[in-house]
Image 1: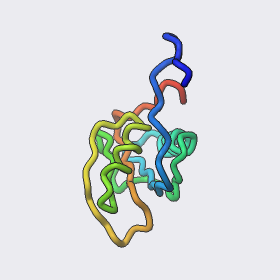
Image 2: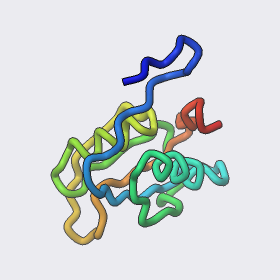
Image 3: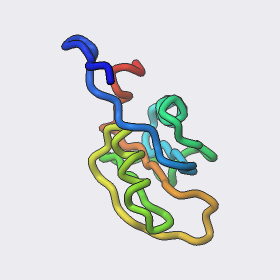
Image 4: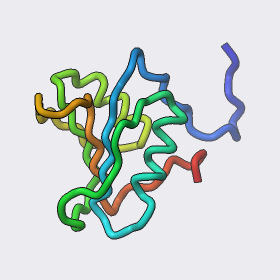
Length: 113
């Protein structure tokens, strides 16, 4: 396998193993944040099935939610977006695996800016 050079930037997380259905919600007043995160996730092999605004626009810290009881999938999404906080909140009414709630702290990874 090729070894990245010192100036290549941060290593990208490996692509997801299998289909990971993701919802991306913007919980800030910054326009286009959900689209930016969607672009990052799709570029890295995730299936973003829904985007939009979260209820309320005052979330400071970003959060990734495991919706199906598969923490590994949520961890993969979090790694792709550089989000540290991951929680399991199962919701069988949703037709997706992971919800991303973008807070004021989220910035697109350097390679995507």
